[in-house]
Length: 461
Picture 1 (cartoon, one colour):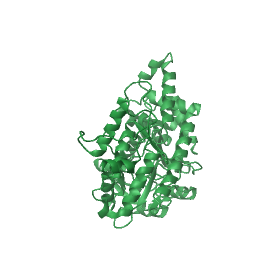
Picture 2 (picture 1 turned 45 degrees about the vertical axis):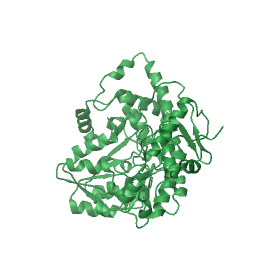
Picture 3 (picture 1 turned 90 degrees about the horizontal axis):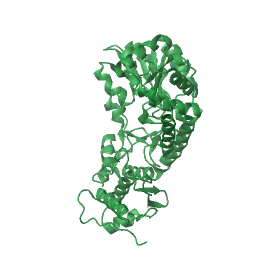
């Protein structure tokens, strides 16, 4: 076919958005058919007298709208129309920004599994049971499934010690409410996740940072911080720490458990990422079960939108957690917990987690290759990677310049208890992009930006 060139003369707004709209119109009018290849980005940029970055953002926006798909080494192709003819349940992003700032992923296989499971549930004669409230701690069969899932990473826990939650974030918030009194100090990694940092001020809790190395929280630093502050609660992410992606070895985990016993610390262990890491050490909770509250969820490895989480606590705390969670949300949704229970029972959960882990390993390798020359910190099965910026880049300035290129990333300022001491680095999510080609374009653009420096990075479109 003759090479397709969009006419932008009558289109208002940003050029990249006009390109995406021209693609949409051409597809709906039949000027572009499924399988047609779009012009190479450099050639189209030359013909339209715009930058390659503008073409890249236009193609990216069209891809987010489900119109095209990019393939490494081959180009960008028009996708087949939705065979069902129905409108999407939710509108696609319309701002043309690729978000690499949030750790999440939704794979097509997960959607297919959900469709099958929902169809099976709909055919049940007692389907109305999912419309009722669950017991405060959750249905026994859902708690038993959670226990089987935790055993997958080396934590043997009785179902009676498990409480269902609306994702791990609700479980964490409940831990802070129950285990930390107003005005008390809570210890955590010096670089921690914003959803712990931000709510702490509202709870009048004083967070104190504990030093990290390439293996995570340092036992000697925890020992010193506990003695200095008198804190009785420590929150940590030993497996694929956020944002550094460090993984704590078994000896380090045992040492952390010993420090906690000496100082009578209660440990809150957040293990939402650990189910993607093959051959990982057992959770810290396996070495200090009497003083560890273990949190995990299906969000990072299976389905973030289902909001299924679990909390495993020492027996003396189970009823308190169940009552607090029930008091805050009345009851957990039986339907979503039943979906995950079935996935755990029939092997779907294992298969989906392994599939995502394999995909993330490929994307981590892509990051290593496409960000060559930059210093990265990551794990082969981590959803994210931390990138140290070359001088004279400053982290927040780089984030702003990246957004100018249509890519949203996270500054390490958001993860630091003391933003002034945060390293000049950013965190990138690798699994949120719809395909590898989109990720490759984003990583290439970020590397070029890092190499160009702040002066060249200003005003890039």
